[in-house]
Structure formats: C-alpha cells, structure tokens
Image (cartoon, rainbow, N blue to C red; front, side, top):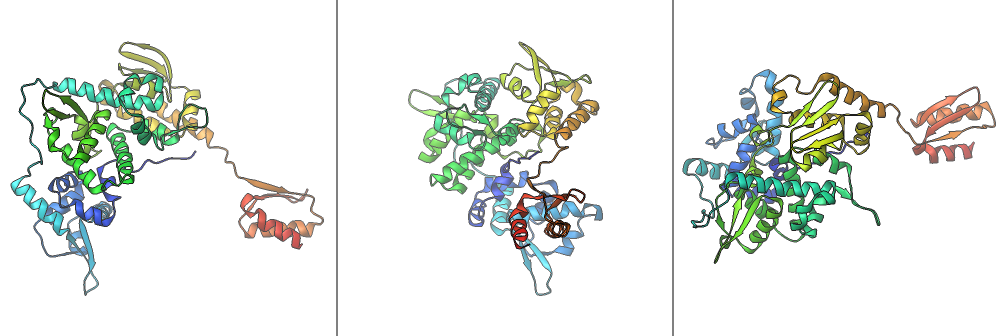
Length: 448
C-alpha cells in the first residue's frame, strides 16, 4: 500500500525548508526568534537557553557531558535540528574538534527580547463598536475552517465556501484534489490523509501552499512568514486597524479571513481585523495538547461508533472509513466495517492513521481509559489492512519453449546474476523474470 507523507506540517518544518540567506534574515525579527524558541524540542530549547549568554564556541564533548548516556540519541536529534535551523554554527577547530556556537543575530535579538520584551508593529484600536465575544469569534473561525474542509470532500456540502474565491480554492486544493476531463474533482491520497490530520497540522499545510503561491507571484517568503508569525502574537478578539498594514499585508489579511484566521469588520470611517485562535495557533508547536479540540468519538468492542457532534465535517470525515447508519441533531451512529475500511485503504489512508484519528478524537469519557479505542478493534483494523498486502504484484515476463536444456539453464543463470529471476520450472523448462531485465534477457537469448 503506497504511503503518502505530507511535509511541512508546522512552523519548524516551514522555517527549516527555507534557503540559508532567507533563514538568516528571519532572525532579525525578535518575534520570529521567540516563536522558534518555543517551537523547539525540549532538549534543543534547553541548549539554546544554556548558551544564550555564552560567546565562545563549546566543544562537542563538553555538550555531551550535559546529558546521560541513555539520552544521547535525543541529544543528537536536538543538535541536528539546531544546525538545520542555523541556530548553531558548526565548526572544526585546530585540534580537529567539532564546536558549536549560537547564531549571533538570533542570540542578540533573543537576549533583548527576553530582557526588554518586544513591541508589535501595531496596537489594538480603541473603538466604541461592540466586538464579537470569544464564543462568537470561535464559532466564526470553526465555521469558516469547516466550510473550507467540506469543499475538499464535497462541494455540495460546503454552502458557506461561496465566500472563498475560486482562485484561492485552487491554491489550497493543489495536491489534495485531482480532476479529469468532465469529471468531478476527487480527493487524492494526500487529500484523504490531510482530512485525518490535526487542525494545527492542516493549518500549516494550507499556509505552506499559500506561501508557495505567493512566492510564485514574487512575494518575499521571509517577509510573509514574519508577518504571519507577528500576527500570531496579536491578542485574539482585539481589533487592529487595517491602515497600519502595507498593501501586500492587507491582501494577505483578506485571504486569511476566508479561512477564519481573522475576521474583518467595517466602521463608518475605518476598517479593522480581529485575529481568531487559528491565527494565534500559527506559532504553537503541534505537540502542544492545549491547542487540540475536545474529542467526540466513542468506539465499542462490537465495532459500533458513536460521535457526539453537530458538525457536518465530522460526519463526512467519519464516512471516509466507517458506515454512517443514522444521524441525530447531536449524535452520529455508525459502524467500522471491512468494506468501508477497504475503500479507505485503497484511497491511501493507512490503518495507523485511522487508529490515531480515533485515539486523538476520543470522547473525554473514554479518553482517560487505556486504551481509549478497544484493542480488538485496533488489531482487526490492522489485520484487514494486511489482507490487502498479502499479494505483491511484480511486472514480469514468462519464457518457455527453449530449444535445449543447456539454453534453459544458461538463461536461468543469466537472470539469476542480474537479480531478475522470480521462478523456474526445470521439468517443463519455463522461467519467469522481472520486467526490468527484459532487454538484457532479450539480447542474451538472441546471442544464444
């Protein structure tokens, strides 16, 4: 079963993929430095703070003394991540010892930011208009985001996506949808897997596609990422004047409003934008459990599935791998069946992704149990996936009717030397070889 992996799921992956010059330019922004610090793995974060006021390079052996022997693998992962992000400069001194030093620009800006704090380019507006409550803003953000995701599954279910321009939808659908002549768009393997991802991971995948699109139009990537991360440091629910934005930033904010990251409002003389929690979560690590939504799925040992939700999106996602039997205003009842799982596997969804989705979205009443999804259900899901992987298809060619046994044995030896022999029958003088060795086999038989 082919496995598709969607890359750049969060801020760290996005930053690490930038060219070296653009990556260095990012560290001139204090808010970028803070966002990177809080998104680092725990051990890497510890190393940055330990070296924050150390100017001289530190030898590798000295750093290895900071960790116990059993933590050496985590130590190497942390060092690799810091070098990849150009936070650590790796050099070899005269004694041929590897040394590490904190990026000077990052170090200076982070020191100033920790000691004196930072001032955002814009302050909240003081207006007499009543702003949306926190609950209203959350409902708006989730509604816009769900409408966007529903459009990927079925355009008939996504009535609210009429506010999203067709050009914007094409940006986000790249790689997630495929369309043939005169056929409705279909989800790709990446598209199916995208729907099972955590909201933060989905958000950063969409932001990555948006940044790629803007880069194709000539927008500087580092400036765009800087603005997005500055936006994540704004206060959710506060109003910010649109006049404080540049022309390009104003266009970006309007695009983000389609996805529910900000809410736009117009007054008598001025207009403003209000960041939602989706925008605030842009610089939060995926491992931060506080950014996850409360679960809603209960799975029983008899493969029955109950989802306590009113969301159309949740229903459509569950339909990807389960049979929906009936739907009440706040309850979806279904079953995990072999037929529905086979369809999911054929669409590129793996058993581990389905199990992970059920575990991450487990209802609070069962989330505390270990395991949150019954073991007989998870084991059976994996077994049904393995049923599809029992037979492997290998393109090959069959050769028979050899003029003599010597010719047959010579052909077998030749195919064996090339690593292309799959099967031989010495009695009936028949042999099957891999398709990639066909040309070599053809030339060999002609010579014989």
